[in-house]
Length: 212
Length: 112
Image: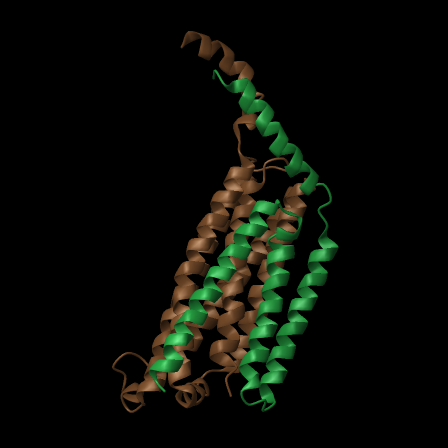
């Protein structure tokens, strides 16, 4: 033990050697595949019910605000860009610029959630919620559409919240110089998660908002 | 600590790969990809206004898949990444498509 303590001083300089960026990245990708399993199941459920109720889905989708969906798509795509730019900035050892890009990402994520709040609020206002008056007059297919709409966009929204928490944590570590231009894998992992959430929205948007 | 040396050499190999990959980080390419993604989004929105009938879903899904490829390859750096991640993603997509197709075999014949 005492020998270990003697050498520990020396090892502080080599502490990065014990870091496994490759393993860290692989762990993140494997986790992302479990997310694909989660959302993939829901997309298959969506496909199945759309196959059974094609006309009802078109009718129900007309309730959705396409502009709102498009704006949220642009917001998420932009936030994905700023995460990547943040990684580039950190790699180039420009901590200030990195933090700026990460803040833009956080603002975009929050804007997305605010839009979602108003969107859901408008639906609730029209009586479209479980056991809501409008929903009870609808056909089975339309009810199915809104069920899927709430569960899938809701779960996606939850992922935005988790992604923001992950990004916030990573930003704190950048601020404390725990993550640096030579040690940025955790920032990249946060980015990978954020991009997956973006990809899920890339599919949710046409499937729920763009049916005619 | 016994296998410190072997661990070291193995890791420096990974590190080399990592440094090589991170060697030319650039803002420009990512901004270009973002412009492409925004363009594809406006295309998918405007195309949805045209009555394409049964083709509409196919077109929307193709555009979404192209957008996903951009995000995975450039934003998620898969294009510049180790081969093992490319195989991973490929297998993952393949499994999803197989399960989707099998589900539709069931659906098509069940409601005939």
